[in-house]
Image (spheres, helix red, strand yellow):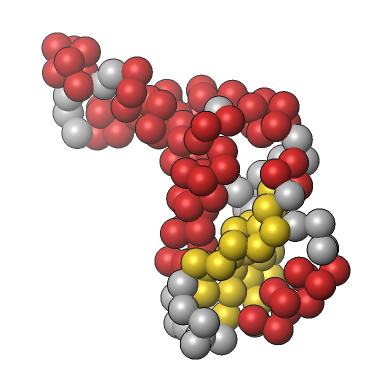
Length: 138
């Protein structure tokens, strides 16, 4: 089993703090991206809205969520070791590998199956975790 990411908030308050912490980075990413796209001051003012920066913050937060990557058997063993979590599986039952993200304060583990593309599965899982668990909280 492998683990990748930086954020695994134990509480709703910790999730909010981590989300707040990526706000300045989101602003820098948006500003530098707009500069790379050669936005002049007027275009920047029209196109770079609070919603754009918030979307960047959402994406940064989600991309930093800790994801575990293993075989289906490793995921099932993890579930057996953590009976307090309700596991929600996304994807096909007929593939060998699983990525998952545990949310202790929601007693939920979201998982996605994959056969050959672990990075794509992890990205999908992170977006799903953000949308299903974190978005309303944050």
